[in-house]
Image (cartoon, rainbow, N blue to C red; front, side):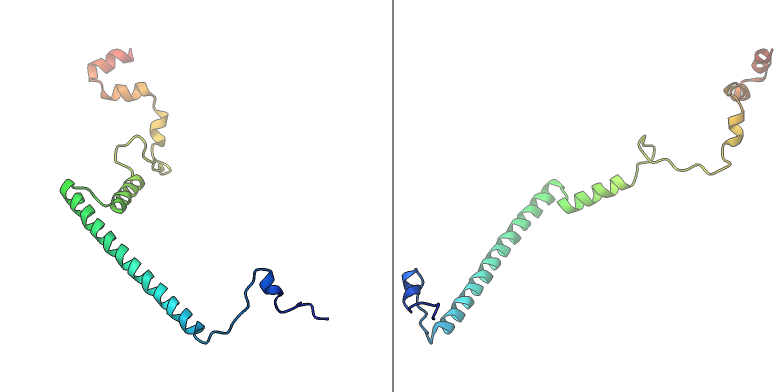
Length: 126
């Protein structure tokens, strides 16, 4: 039994019969080459347009003293990483061991007494 059916069944189902065209390979190759050439022309056109836009952008940046977006973002990231001196939000440096331990034993009153004039110290001690 032949399961393919009669030769014209494919045509009845909407398919087409394949005819061997000796020039089909050559035509397909020419079509592919034309598509590649069109794509290259399109890319060249858009590269030229983008170059013109970039030169216009650079003119505006120069006129108003602006920086490129990438440069501005890089500087902002560097500024965020490097804390400002005297900033309230800067990271705390670890205190080495042994530093400041002696001062903890003194009270605030003793510290203030060191900076007062002699007669005033005597008066407060009594």
